[in-house]
Amino acid sequence: MNRIDLTVTRTIPASPEKIFDVWIDPKSPGGPWFGGEKVIVNPVVDGLFYMAAKYQDRSWPHYGRFIQLDRPRKIEFTWVSEATKGVESIVTLTMEPRGEETEVTLRHAGVPDDELGRQHKDGWTWILSAFAEALAARRKASS
Image 1 (tube, rainbow, N blue to C red):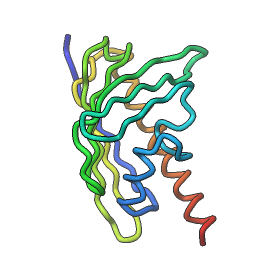
Image 2: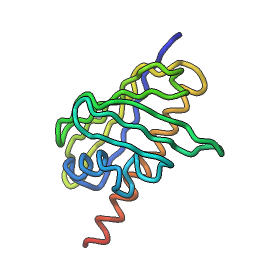
Image 3: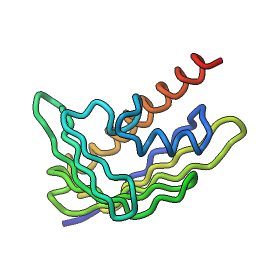
Image 4: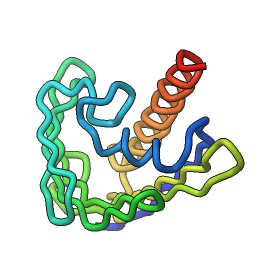
């Protein structure tokens, strides 16, 4: 099976520390785990996660484990789902401060080079956009 790497970059109006903390907290609105049908997250190195996400009128289970948690610079975890054909892929999130904002780069390595695999780019783009909007709203509310 051929594999590809996908990269999505987004500037987010928050500090790297805030982004890191919201990303790993399953109860934090705007985070990638928030709103899943069923979510279990143990955000420690070698900690496991499970998330069932509703998409196109069905539940899509996702599994993995955290490989690296380097607050506030990097979060890395494995990613296994039906769309990866049950094979472990690697998601790396890096945060680089840019003044009062942060450039977030998400790289998903080892995704199958097929239609379902390539759809991960749209999914991660949507997640980073929703994440940015949620943090922008929080920032505005606290001002």
